[in-house]
Image: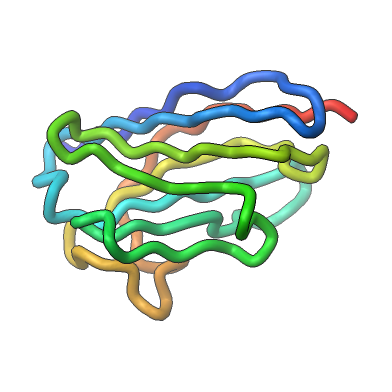
Length: 126
């Protein structure tokens, strides 16, 4: 059974930083593409970032490019999202996702994930 668990959310002031973490079990982590998504109240879920199995291939939403960095530690089965220069519009529930079928971020990476965590709340105050 695949389990995906996020942590690291919280309340931060605009301009601040947070680092989210995600652990995944029940799959071969170092063969899986991993992703971060977010959903704000009243809005659709948005793909934030994707990273391939080796960490060498990444993708980002335009809204977070230059501010967020995705990384992974395959030895620890852990995915990270370093979020800098946070804005109030980054406020959302952030979800980690795992893809056991593809090892890389495809051109349609926002729709390739099959396993999801429960989410961790990020709130950015102005």
